[in-house]
Length: 94
Image (spheres, helix red, strand yellow):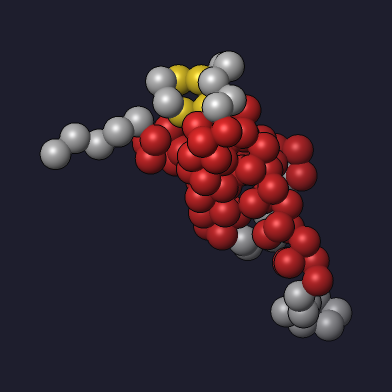
C-alpha cells in the first residue's frame, strides 16, 4: 500500500498557511488546532477540486497548489469568522 502525495502535502500546506495566519495575526486565540485542521482539510479539498477542474499550473504531481491554497484560506477564514461570532468565554474584568 502506498500513500499518494495528496495527504502529506495537504498537511504541510495547512501547516504553512496556519503559520502565516498566526504570524500576521499575532495570536490564534486558543483555536490553533481547529485552524490547522481547517487549513489542512481545505488544502486537501482544494487540491482535489483543482485536479477535477484541470488547474494544473503550479502543481506538484497531481496536487494543485493554487486551488489548495485558496480553499485552505477559506477554511481559516471560516474558523476566524465562527470564532468571532461565537460567545466570548473570558471572565469579565480579566
